[in-house]
Structures are given as C-alpha cells and as structure tokens.
Length: 242
Image 1 (tube, rainbow, N blue to C red):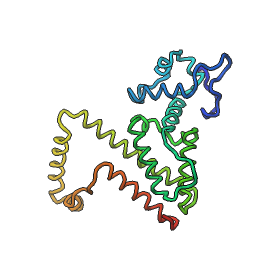
Image 2: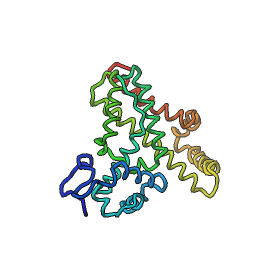
Image 3: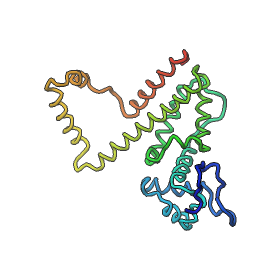
Image 4: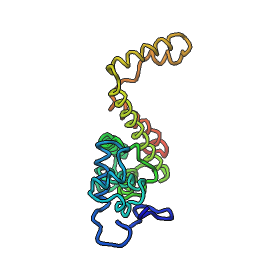
C-alpha cells in the first residue's frame, strides 16, 4: 500500500505527507477532523480510509500518503479530541485533588461528546502531542503529592481508566435502554423482582444483607465523584501528603 513503511514507525515522526510531489493539499488536522466528524455521526465502525477520503474530496490511495495505516488514523483522532482539554498554564496546583477531579470531569464530558473514543483508545497513543501536553499538565498538578513520579503516572492512568470504564458503562446502559421494547423502568422492575426471589431464598445471605441496606444513595454524577475520591484517597496516604 502506498506510503506504508517496512519497519515500525510513529506517525508523529513522519513528515505530514510521504513521497515527492506538490505541497500537501491536506494537513493531519484536516484528516483527523474529517474522521472525527464521521465517528461522531456514525460511530467508530463507520471510519474508513475510503470514507475519510470521500469527506475530504480526495482519492483513497492518495490518503495513504498522509496516513499509512488505519491505526494511525485512530491515533490522529484521539489526539485531535484531546485538544479539547482546557489546561491552565502555571505552577503546580495547591489542591492537586481538586485539579485531578476537574480533569476527570473534562474527560467524562469529552467521552460523552465522542462516544467512540473508548473504542479506539490505546495506551500506545500516549506519545501524541496533545497526550504529552495532558500528561505534563497532570504531573505539574501533582507536584504537591509526595510520591515518586512513577506512582503519579500510575495515578493518572488509574483515574483515566476509571473514567473510561464509567462512561463506557453509562453508554452501554443507554444503548440497552434505547433497544428495549418496553420502558427502562419496567425492565428494572422485572430484574429486581427476579433478584429478590433468588436472594430471598437463603442461598445468598450476604447478598440479602447487602440488598436489605439498599444501594448507596446518589445520582450518577455523585457516584462518579465518590468513585474518584475513593481512588484518590489511596494515593493521598501513600506518601503522607494529601
């Protein structure tokens, strides 16, 4: 395929367009924006080199001069939406917990705007320009946390992973609710009735005790905040700082 390399390479280490010829007609930003528009409208499965080329008005084969692999296209897309983070400039924050929570909320909002993001995200994309910008900011925010740098990176990864899982579950539940031939309330009532019958028979005493106390109160937003705060609690005590 035109533009493909015979050895591993990073898309960011490549020139904007491989090969000879006139000045590139498109930038990586143009290509990423087109792919993001397609994914936002029709999902990740709708993104293809042919579809993106059609969106840009160029030939599919010529697009490979800019993006040699579909995986590279995904990386461009993830980096493009990562530019949506609002990262204030300045020294490390006095309240690192508040700043990390604020970033987590931004991540949740971004993933809601782009539901396909969790589908294509990969830890390998951490070397993209906006990923590096995000990580540098997070480490700046965490300067007040007295733990090794490796532990700080672990915190960032765990927070991001928790947010991604939470939003993916929200999206899956919403998709399921839309597919039901009855109301979501009817679905929940039927499942709770079945569970009550199973748990009430004595075979699951610990579950029965837990269900008797009822679920922890809170809206989805409150549960999201509680989840993250409990995660941050474990790091706040790791180095004696909080």
